Amino acid sequence: MQPRALLYRRPSEPQAIEIVFDRAVYLVRVRRHRQARRYTLRIQSASREVVLTIPPRGTLQEARDFAQKHGAWIAARLDRLPRAAPFADGTVVPLRGVPHRIVHRRFIRGTVWTEADAAGEPLICVAGNAPHIERRIADFLRREARRALDAASRRFAQELGVEIKRVAVRDQASRWGSCSTTGVLSFSWRLILAPHFVLDYLAAHEVAHLVEMNHSARFWRIVQRLCADHERAKVWLDVHGADLHRYGLPDAAHQSP
Image (cartoon, rainbow, N blue to C red; front, side, top):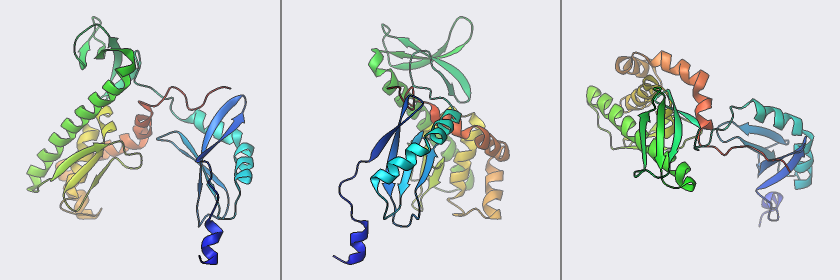
């Protein structure tokens, strides 16, 4: 083995460490990076995950001390993130931009459906036992997202005279959509939580890439042709996009000892 390779070899290291600040325990994921020159911390807003990067010559003890020293920073940054909204009875979740309250209907046949209560409040109703609520709501939202994004994408593709191979939905943390050179469009299922004009914009954006695989002036002219509301949608995502990632997350980002 070459001497340089030995520099980066480490005994088995844990994937995460715990630190305590103000009587709360925080989980910190650790990763070693060859090009890192110092210890760095960052918060992934989509997953609410704390990530500590270790330089090649760093030690786990130094990493632990570094994270503990910045416990106040970690706590403050996490507290500024939108509160997690688990898929549970009573949680209010936006569906196509309209707030819906999740209501557990244990003794009613079916899976998940929408309705309005006597006062006109929109509801997402879920049948079955309580442990299945989270999965059933998540599956329902993914189905709704796939249906809406497939329909919007194929409508725009027909307008441009291009073909889509497949439309997929995932839980993408770093981007709202993507387009492959083979004609596969991928979207975040969380777009079903946003108003319809936002979902339409993302569908138009990725379909436009079937013509222009770039962000040139011609590309944006195509987007404008397909979706006149695209500037409004971009502003909405800049302001509210991060908030969509809190839905379906666990009830707390940390726990008290």
